[in-house]
Image 1 (cartoon, rainbow, N blue to C red):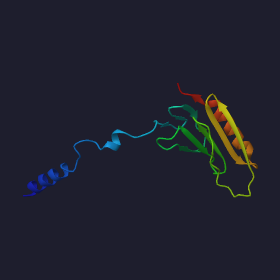
Image 2 (spheres, one colour; image 1 turned 180 degrees about the vertical axis):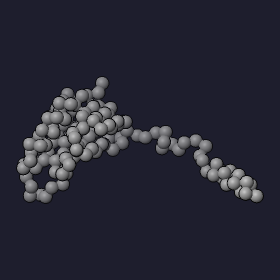
Image 3 (cartoon, rainbow, N blue to C red; image 1 turned 45 degrees about the horizontal axis):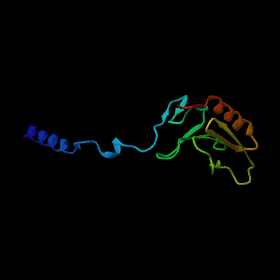
Image 4 (cartoon, one colour; image 1 turned 180 degrees about the horizontal axis):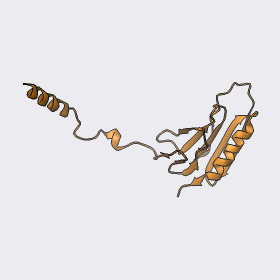
Length: 137
């Protein structure tokens, strides 16, 4: 009796497995992104991750973009395969004066923004990112 119940349970659970993978597993829109401790690689570029900075990648179907966010959330460095028209702002009070810088590495645009006080850290990170940036073939 126990064996019959066990076989019946296994048979029922086996029926729950789909015959083929669902379509969303076979196709995910957008370019692939590879993230390691040291690097971020997408279809447009490879860049070294600044130590301690958080990483945000672009949504599927959007142009390849990476945003690094400082550990205290007051500065951003954005790298994009397309022109950066409306860059994000760090979450700092409106009265905090910000500084910005833009650089081009071939067709890749790099943008940095951070508070005027402490700008040296954001500027140094921008220089580090630009030095490590390599366009993909």
